[in-house]
Length: 129
Image 1 (cartoon, rainbow, N blue to C red):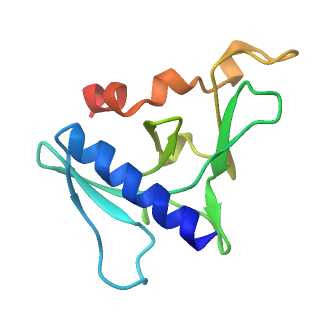
Image 2: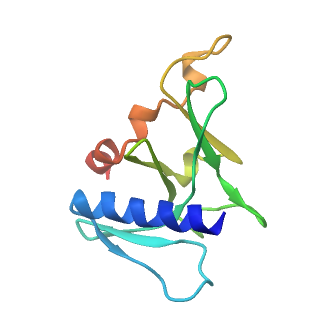
């Protein structure tokens, strides 16, 4: 698990740098965030999580918490993940205990309850920040 987490952190850092984001990493293992992203002078505390495909293939999911519980806006600004070569960033106010980003609408779901992956792609989020 540690290896996959580190791999995700490196991939997220690479994809962020590729988009022109300056990335810093805290020393040691005592902060709640894994990286600090500097986007045009705005600093974001980013927790990186490894994602996995949802069983029905409609998207992917990752935890919005750690072993001590949910993250708060006092600890981080959002969670990033990498899936199929793309980086996604979900602001902390959009995170639950688990985050599911979907490509398609699953059966028996209402669109207003779904987080679509394309809305959280790093390039789209950068336009909002």
